[in-house]
Image (tube, rainbow, N blue to C red):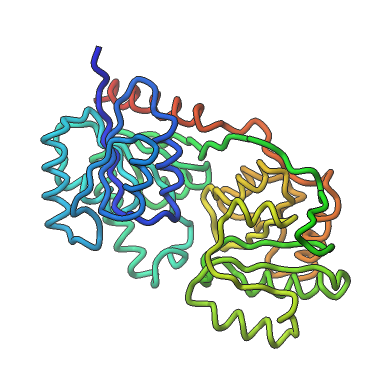
Length: 356
């Protein structure tokens, strides 16, 4: 019997953020469904094809404008005749709500915060977007959130007509690193890693302050701030002011797998996280993890990994404990695999069909 088609509409083509989720699903598949991915041209469609996915590249996304995006989506829906259009990110959600008629509409929310200014430049813009999302949510047959915190924020801000289904980002635990295993290529000492955009919501100055406190008692410790963004110059100035230039590296983009293998602790003191793949991957590898107790972080991590970002002494203590006391590292307990995540998505499609 021919499988029904689910069209995944993704309005960005870079390999940050939602791309990890999309590629994991493409590799695994959704049981009982044929998947087709609509994206703008770029790195993501190339990687999707490399894993054998069916991909349609088109003028879809903010860079192409609403009119072209709507025209592209209508054309693909007409040709592929999907039973489900599954959207990711706000732009695709809104375009689909405006133009798709017939197929069931499903959305996965990856990036909402209780505080509007985390993702919007002003509270006014946040309110406008909340009204737009409240309107478009009336058109959707199912809504998925990647954490309970995400689901709660969606209900609070958007008042959806359908129940929110929580499906965390699935991760496969492939292996665990030996605690503090000696590596010939690196000097001795605690290694702390940040994998985050250099932007205000990531609270990297607080991490640098916490590391400075750690460095006073563990002078061999080193910090890597991997990533790029608008806070680059300010962070470099802070590092210089604290006389940490020899202890802090800012290499820009790095391969996450390689970087994690070379460090002991991943630190993420963000204002908000929904269901961070960086935290999940670090915990799955057996790394130490230090994070702020916000958003979905407490759903991933135990209390021993959570710390007030504003308390530099507490940050330093947590970094040292997670790096030097492997028994307090979090691991992943009863966390869904990629296959389990995809099976839950299939169940959500079925439930949406029953409600239609």
